[in-house]
Length: 209
Image (cartoon, helix red, strand yellow):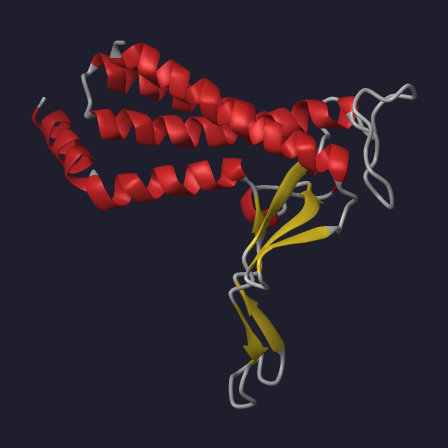
């Protein structure tokens, strides 16, 4: 199997796994429900968000959500083009697979944003239905991203002498995320840790041209 087909197969596998997990969560859990996996430090916690990775928000209301969805589509197109560019330049295999991870992570969350509002019923106080008779909970571009991975590794209270947060409870790691977010994070970390030289050399080559 050539490299191009490996990248395509890798992409399809990542997307299928991401979507299978999200659909299972939507059709088996209510919003806010949790399942302990490894004690108190790894839980499946079903949450939804309107924004970016790890629950961050972009703008307000439906307008912010629509612009975020459109931005994601443009970003995915740019990343896809760049992967093709790197492939034609015969970039290292690790670089190509890292960008493919980022690409698939972005697509995975785009699918939620574009279609989940139309194909799922609401998950508040009930388990959602796939393709409900009365239509979904929202419209095209306004679906919510499904998150479920929660790692509250350390819980405690800030000492009173800590500015701003003294005496307040804290949890590390608080954000709830999904596999698509993980793909993006892993891809970026691999590029930073192992392929900085490739990009620095590429800049030097462009400067000499």
